[in-house]
Length: 59
Image 1 (tube, one colour):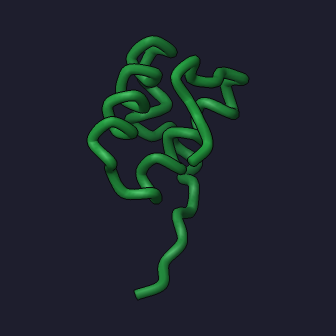
Image 2 (image 1 turned 30 degrees about the horizontal axis):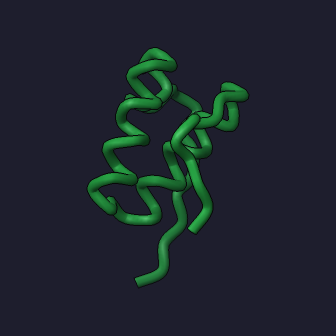
């Protein structure tokens, strides 16, 4: 099934989180090996905020 995440004009739940909360969720998602789509959505929000995870590493 092919689908694409289309950003909503309203803020997502992730966008309403503080920077620290978002980084914590990102780190937990990577550690839990969450779906690549979910991690990509978090990375998009982090990028929009000009934040990168200190624990982020490309595999």
